[in-house]
Image (cartoon, rainbow, N blue to C red; front, side, top):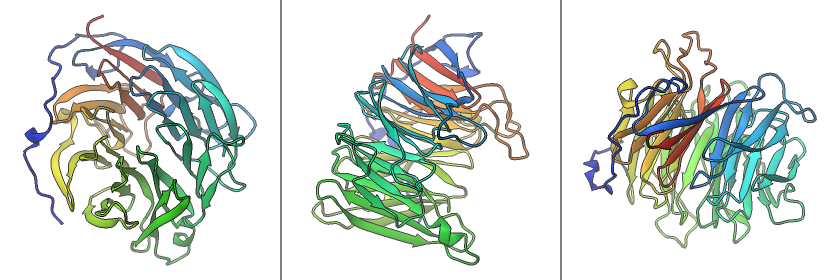
Length: 423
């Protein structure tokens, strides 16, 4: 199905930043439109990987990227908490790479999953619980938390749901073992629904077996799974549902998978338990990440050919508003993560760098109508053309709701913190 285009000027106008700060010797290569580098911080072990931040960016948590086998007992890296100025507030040791971090908008609760097979729960910067949710549940690479900090959803070998107010928040209150790998987890802002998904990679690894993507919705209030949907793809495809987003009321879901599809589900009747697949966009490469704005009116998707698209979410279809591709648009290499700021005014992406393009992973921010606001690389490092990722690959980026601060990090080892305005 082809997407129609409409003029993006219907969107709320955004005041664009229109001055340059000039060269900053310690800053990575950047189009720093109005932003000044405050601080760059080198990781103490390995590099930085995924993270999350409060809406005002006064609290930021970033996990480590670590090579080699994870350890359940040995500290090999740190989840580090920063403020908006880049000052380290606290560190907690972990035994493996942290692929997933989720923080409440007010920063009071943070949940992280690690390749050391442990779940970590924080009140502000204090670790209050950690451990393995279920025996045999490995590589916890998908985490979400409700806005009020009450519940956490975790994707690993399976999906688990946790009541963080319980005496033992690590022990699940619900486990779905239908999929054999889960990374995509998202709560509606209301906290009523958690959507999650993965695929049957065990079945797919059997010779000739057709892989199936799996999507489910769990009703937290009713304490039961209310919806499931599977899509079977040709043998040999990677059908993993990699990332998804759900609207505040739970009526809209966008999802991206490694079978090169971007999917849009709609529940037309809020009292029903059926989400209908309204639009299936076939892309040319894998989808790593999606995001939806707080009002459920637009969604952004990043596709690994080096493409970022913003869509309007209609009652029954997607409408393409704009797309960005190439260095003129602030993109080099494929997008790893994409996001929309808490106030819906900014769209952002982190990338892996581009083969032969002269720079490493980038963090790029656009206004909602597509104007470039900020773009900086973690280092002037090429992605080698043999398929090996550079140490500069960027996986975390966030901008404050007010637009006054932003931060991003790459697994080469540095996190960067910027402030709007002159030094």
